[in-house]
Structures are given as C-alpha cells and as structure tokens.
Amino acid sequence: MRLARLCALAALCCAPAACRKNAPPHTVGLALDVGGRGDQSFNDGALRGLETMAAGLRYTPRGYEPMPDAEYRTLLGPLALPHLGIPRPIVLQGKAQEDYEPNLRLLVDQGAELVVAVGFMMEAATRRVARDNPRAKFLLIDSPVLDDAGKPITLPNVRAVVFREHEGSFLAGALAGELTRTGKVGFVGGMQLPLIQKFEVGFRAGLRMVNPAAAREVLVAYTGTFDDERKGIEVGQDLYRRGCDIVFHGAGLDGLGVIKAAQQAGRWVIGVDSDQSHVAPRNVLTSMIKHADLAVYQAVRDAVNGSFAGGDVVLGLRESGVGLSPLGGEADAAVTAAARAAALKDVEVLRAAVISGRIVVPATPQELARFDPPPPEALGLARAREP
Image (tube, rainbow, N blue to C red):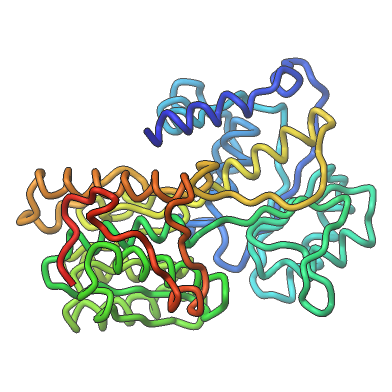
C-alpha cells in the first residue's frame, strides 16, 4: 500500500515541463545543519533529494560522479524520478549555529537560484537572508517561517515544509508496543524542543493504542544535542540496561550512537528520518522516515520549471511525507514471522485510521493527555494487548 502511494506521488512529481531534457543548467545550493553529511538521517535525506534525485550524482571523497541509471533505479525504486539538469550542486556544511546565516548568504552570492536550508534551527537565518534577497528562492525544511514574536508568517520567496512527525511516530509506537517482549520500550531525543517532542508524543500515543502497560512504563531520555554520537551510545546503553528491548530515536547524529548501543546489547532500535536499516541490519527494526528528499526534489523541480511559490507545505501520512520503512531486524529471533505479520497488519489499520481522520494523533503533551481514540476492538486490531 505504501509503495503504491509513493509510486503515485512520484508520478505527480514528473510534470512535463520538469522532465524536459536540454533545459539550461540551474544552480542550487544547500546548507546543511550541524549533523552534516553522513548523519544517515535528515541531512543525508535532503542531500539525496538534491544530489541523487535532482542532479543524478553520487558524492565521493574525490567529488561528484555521475550515477549510472541502473544504480539509481535500484537505489531509489519508486522515488527514482527524472533528473532535473542540475550540473553541480553547491553544498555547505554548518559546524555551529553561527555558520547558518553566512552559509546561506554565500549560496546567494554564488548565484544559487534556489537555496535549501536543512533543519528547523536555520529558521531565523533563513528569514533574515530571504528578506534581504527577495529575488532569490528559498526552501526551509522542518520549520515554518516565524516573526520576531515566534508566530508563523509567510514570505513570498520562501517555501517552508514541515512534517507531521507525530503521525509516523504513532505507527512506530504501535509496532514497538506489539513486538516488545520485555514490556519496556524507550525513546531517545536530541534537544528537548517542541519539534522533537512530537516524535515522543506520537510514539507514546501509538504505544497506548496497542499496549497500555508499556505506554505507562516507557523510558525517555534526551541527549541535549544532535551531533554527538558518543552521547547517543551512552544514553542508549542505559535504556537497554534498564530493560528496554526496543528504543526509538529522534536524535540526528546522536541516533547513530543509539543504533550502536542496540548492536552491543543485541536489541532492536527504530531509526528516524531516513531508512537506517543498512547501518545495523540485524538491529534496526524499522525507521520512521521523513521524506526530506521528496521535499527538496519538488522544490528544485518547481524552481527549474518556473512554478516555485512560497508558503507552507505540510506532509503527513496522507501525503506520504512520513511513514515506516520495510520491517527488518533479526536481533530477536524469538519473535515469529507470524507475530511480525500480525503487527504489520495492525499498523496498516492504524495508518488508514489516521489518514481517514478516525484517529487524530496528538502532537503535544497536552494533546496526549486528552487523547481518546476509538477502542482497539472497534478498529479491528488483532494483537492489541489488554490494559
């Protein structure tokens, strides 16, 4: 079902004007967040949208190389969309928050017709640079544009893409609740910010749907950063020592440390932002994907064909902007194939209920306290556990 929706979304992405071969070259710049290239998470997802999908390139230590079509189609499957004539992207790495604004201004100065700002922490810098450069186009990923009082605003030259992370995390929580054998699951966040709390809240809500006892016992920790793998290892080790057999992370580069802790403990982990199964195939149960790659590709496409418009874009389960990657992980051989299949069936029931509006997933702790979904039996869940 999810594959079919992605195929449909991919078809929509290929407007005829965007697929013209012989279009003049275009310059696109991308400013990375502190996690940077190689986080195997959100930054790498954005890079995939620009370098792999839009430009048809792969990055190596020697620079860019063309990616053969066969490799491209194998790598991305239904997301192997037509390349957009981007000859060589300009990518800048931010080492600290102080780098954000200078990097964005440098991309404008280098003639980028579209500037991509990756991550909610770039919001203020993007707003200032966009106001100073009204002829340039900007894509801000993971945050609306805010005024000085913190209220959402729109700028005509900024497209702001946000995700309903809580919806995808809801499915991750349900899967964890159905497959845990210890009855203890955990969540690791990076900085304790409203955006990251959406992951935690959605995860808790999904647990509550299928395993109320585990929802009451969920263990939560925040590393305080997004770029310290060692902290992720330490926090992950602590949660596994305390009895968790499944941990979901929303911690950027720190999350790679959580995955290493899962490997050391022989337990499961749920990845985030990109499919992280290749990092630890035996231990990554699934990943809650945010399709930053599609958001970047669509913005580049629109800039190339002249249809780019500012404003807000919200991507959730209905839009296939978030979701779970295919089930993997063989760390717990005691969980049978039949149990996995039943759990996946229930996850699909819940996904459909969210898309239809029958379940409204909470996004804040206050909404979680008021969360009153239909009873599991009314939804036809097969494996939901007793309170």
